[in-house]
Length: 372
Image (cartoon, rainbow, N blue to C red; front, side, top):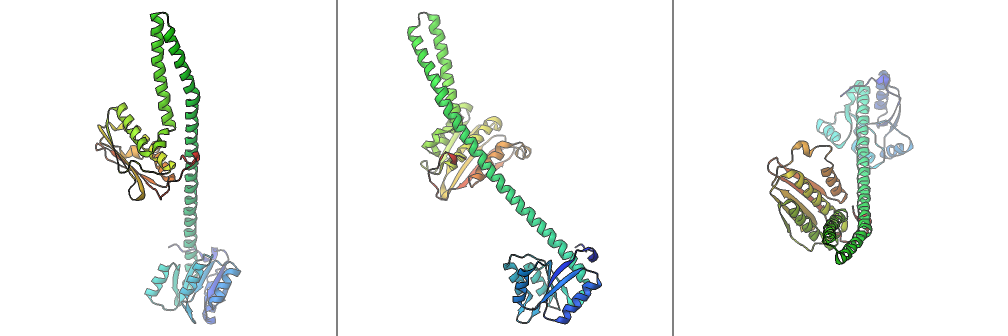
């Protein structure tokens, strides 16, 4: 513990809980001898102690252990119930090592026998340094917690904005592009019926094939932007993802669900859907696997989605990559939904992604803003 130079300390205001006028005088002499600038107020009852705490600010408390009808521990307890936080030094006769240790374990700053008053100024200096350091640490922890809350709120707002924008784009594709493609299909059908030459009919057939491809692409884009299939429930939506993944990749994909008709609010459903979507996308890009298993459950009031593969796994460097926004985004999305995301992987032995969200019995119908 560092020892501050008492002469360099600012003027201290001390609250002294002491029933002996003589001992109070000895304390004042010890501090004066060490040239510690101070002003001191002595009290000898809990009522006066409580009143002084509210009437003026103090820098530190010195307290005898035993006083008529109560002890310093009673004063410490009173201090804890107030809004005041001050360093608290026991200044007493021989109270025994066990009592001194117990007092410090309760949070009292330090203990000094009255026979060692020549050390009092140094003990006060050290106690104030420790107290200030702990207060600064507590402020830093509080500020960090507040910053994390602001970040979580921002992440929630950002995800809401992204999903709303996706829904808006999907509607535009459906209404504008979908309508235009439908009109083109009608025109091509007319041209096919009235075509005069084989060459024209061949061109119409080619255009019709391209049109079908464009319609299929627009439908896939709309599904990725705003999964309307979620209106049928989470299980059908995850099943559609699994089947689509198997068709595109050729990787054997299976889905197990304990209750296909499970219900949950749309924000939780969308979180699970996006988690499965991102996990399957990563598997198709990096896993080099031959099998994927999905397990969806709502047992014991907790939604659990597990996606595992038997592929190459993820290295520690890739998993902890600060630019791995896909994984980080999934974790933030899970946190916003009130859950968490775990990733288990071993190079050469596959990867498992587990999403867990307590349901809390919430099956309410949300608005579009609930799509987080």
